[in-house]
Image (cartoon, rainbow, N blue to C red):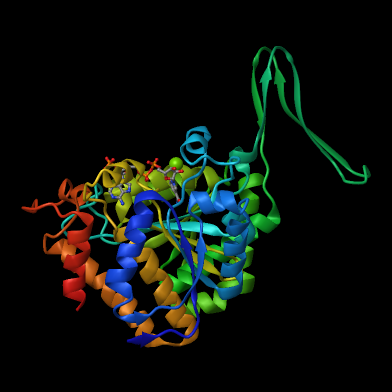
Amino acid sequence: MIIMKTPIVEIDGDEMTRVLWTLVKDTLIKPFVDLKTEYYDLGLKNRDDTNDTVTAEAAYAIKRRGVGVKCATITSNKERKLEYNLKRLHPSPNATIRAILDGTVFRKPITVSCIKPSVSTWKKPIVIGRHAYGDVYKNAELLIPGPGKVELVYTGEDDSEEMRILVADMKGAGVAQGIYNTDESIKNFARSCFLYAIDEKIPVWFATKDTISKTYDGRFKELFSEVYETEFKASCEEAGVHYFYTLIDDAVARVVKGEGGFLWACKNYDGDVMSDMIASASGSLAMMTSVLVSPSGAVEYEAAHGTVQQHYYKYLKGEKTSTNPVALIFAWTGALAKRGELDNTPELTAFAKKLESAVLQTIEEGDMTGDLVRLASPAPAKTHNSWEFVDAIAKRLA
Ligand code: NAP
Ligand code: MG
């Protein structure tokens, strides 16, 4: 039995992923690890019962403990309010946690030899780090009715300073948009990216359109490189992590010709678009992990997919669904490995790596869930349900 020094912050969730959460813990972790967790129930009912205070408590616990693992959770809407008889609608738990940890989300595909990415040159996963703050996601837009001036105006807090620039002298109707970002947010984004890359020992690529947007994108380029030079150069060199800056179009061209195996730090919109491209080209949503890295170094691991609602309704009717637990398992192994590293308990980290290898081996030997059966070549003879699949992993692990 492997002993843990410090508990992991465990955040339980909803629907099919909640069912798999217990299955994974009971079958693949607890028989081998004397698991210590600080448990928060973010199931929708409990969030409602606690007026959502439990979500913020969980986030502060991650800040305090340094490592968390989270199950998928329902973001409530009108239908869910009826379904769960909620007092009110609550904000997305991930948004609440992200706001408290001020972190960046990194998405990494889990690759197996029997599922080939759509891009034939890719040999290693491409990780996307999306700067999830500002730009077009916090814009101000105007529908321009007719001829007139569009200007960008800045007024200093005490009215002492004013800056004004002409955007366009409109000759007719059109549209206009104002966007912004902050130095602090850009620097924290860069910090999270370098922390992640040092952890994973992979190069960092950052790309913007600074040749066109000399001030706005130019500022991103400047701050990113400043954070590298002043805060991370030494530790990056020590870890063998290389920082590479290029134009966004050059980056895209290199990505589809390259081998992968790097962190692609993306501005907000680029990250939104490119993460879906990488996910779809890599295979299945159920093979995508996600980790939130706070600039303070605290980390939260989760699966990139949601609660797999439709499978849950079938499960409630008694069906043993073929829901893929791989991303959930990798959320746990990510957290256990990190805890082992921070606590200097290498046997815990080694166990996490062993479990990951057992998962990959199980799939590569032809035992997998339905979503992967559809993608694998050669196609396996049998589709496992989640319970059979987890048992097949447990056999290899033992
Ligand atoms: P979803 O749960 O990701 O599922 C969408 C579809 O993707 C499923 O119907 C299934 O397709 C496939 N899929 C996803 N994960 C799978 C897995 N592990 N194994 C096999 N197939 C998988 O997204 P959703 O249905 O749009 O959202 C359901 C709930 O999740 C919502 O209430 C949403 O708020 C929440 N959500 C939470 C998070 C989070 O906590 N991080 C993220 C996204 C969504 P088939 O039906 O074709 O098998
Ligand atoms: Mg998107």
